[in-house]
Length: 135
Image 1 (cartoon, rainbow, N blue to C red):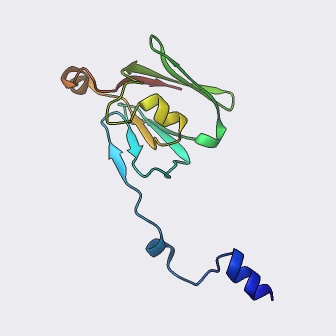
Image 2: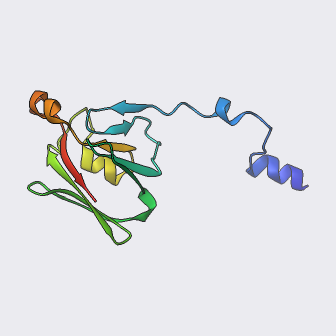
């Protein structure tokens, strides 16, 4: 009886390799940030990469609030700590239906990266550019 209920309402572990049943996670590199392409993909952590080589990874689960101010950038409130992301075009469509701030709010950004001087100079007018990340 229980077997029939489980067959009808629940999936059983058939011992199949998890790698075979999961689709590959695809991250688009959009210069200053990565974007998870799959519509159901969500990042568990956000990696913040400074141009000096410093890296901080923060859990999306600890994000209390995210703010966007066009003149001040993005502020993430993470369990008593603030992370400030300054730059330009931080909420402009940089790829069809992709805006950095909105993607952060939807947990679709696995990493952010500060631009170095040559990137700042060469970047197009519509590119999202992260000039600094402060924590």
